[in-house]
Length: 273
Ligand SMILES: [Zn+2]
Image (cartoon, rainbow, N blue to C red; front, side, top):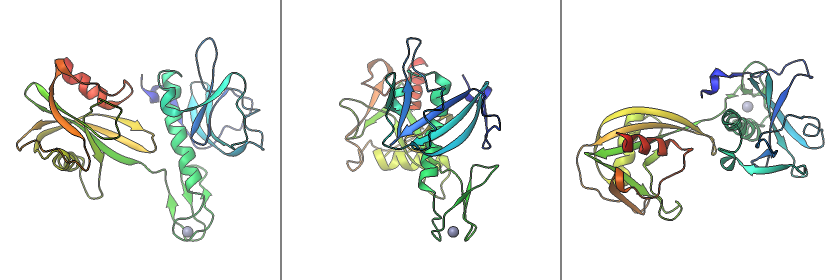
């Protein structure tokens, strides 16, 4: 299901305050979720949430079907209702409706960007939000800031009927994944793929092809997925970054990442070939 078949992004809130709305409310980075017998979802009632005493800031995000979507940063004093709970965004995957999860990723990044760009990074003056654009301008020096994204490449390297998986010391026990890393200034995405693989496991790659992408709002990445073929060199694990790296056949895979990740889609696609 594509988000933008159903969601119309916007910056300027509706003038009519009685229209149906959805509230993506965060407290210290956790999303407020309402539990009901029909399933979990984000709250639709705004009155308690937007009480001035609780709200640090709110932002308009756009319209999902007939509902206006807002993000909101709540103070630590706000307490969730009896049928509500604050949850880390990752833990809401598969629990709240798919489109709400996608918008929650946007909401989280807008809230974080707003929170960390209240003042100009150049001259320190208080910034002002532009009315028709998701941007903040400094009235002192004119510097304009847009929400930040950190592009990262993620690549599945294969050699005949095997694929390369590695594990970082930060992974849960026994878990392996494909290679990934942030794009550096001045690099093309393909160069970032080749560099990351060479740095982490010492091999050359070729036939680098785009696979797909995924927003990764933890906190502000865009994962850009590729497939690549082994093109030479000895597998040599960089111990500063990885604990292990090995070639695996599709029928003897180790523990891999969850359904929500593009890493999993890359691995599943290999296994299906
Ligand atoms: Zn400034």
